[in-house]
Structure formats: structure tokens, C-alpha cells
Length: 100
Image 1 (tube, rainbow, N blue to C red):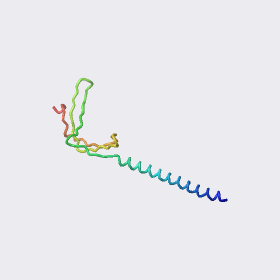
Image 2 (cartoon, one colour):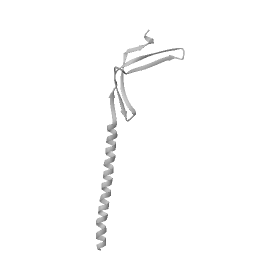
Image 3 (cartoon, rainbow, N blue to C red):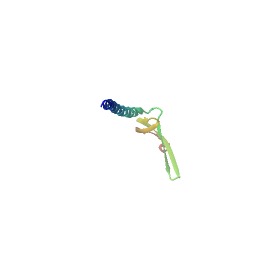
Image 4 (cartoon, helix red, strand yellow):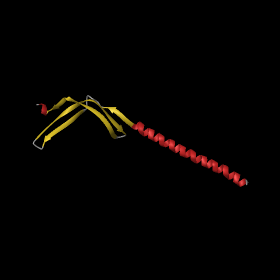
């Protein structure tokens, strides 16, 4: 009987420790997910230096190209990956040979 009394508290402690490890593991997963969410960055584009280059071709006979400026824009990154963005182009800023 004394042997059983010594084993039962040991088992209870062991089981309690296991639950704490699982809880700590879940908390670590939550922190990793929060860190991953925090790693996503949204940045404004530089409107003075950013532009869109376009090119149009008529089946190898005639080609023209030009540039357009942006009214606004953001780019979303996560680490080194571009994950999204939003841009508004100023069509009145069109510059290219089609204007000649």
C-alpha cells in the first residue's frame, strides 16, 4: 500500500507537467502566428521617383511606349515577398510617342 501511495503522486505530477508543456507549446504557436502577422508591412510608394512604363505593339509593324505617374500607391510585403498592393495611376500624366 505504501508503494501505491508513492506512485500515485508521481503520476499526478507527471500528468500535470505534460499539460503544462502542451499549454506552453500552444502559447508558442500563438506567438509565432502573431509574429508572422506583425512581419507583414505596408509601405507607401515614392510618388516622385515611381512610374509605370508601358509599351504597345501592332503585330510587329509599329511600336510605341511611354510612362505614367502615380497619384497614390502602397505595396505590401512579408519578408522578401511582395504579397499585395494598390495603385492609382494618373492618366493625364501620359508621356510617350503616341502624343506626337
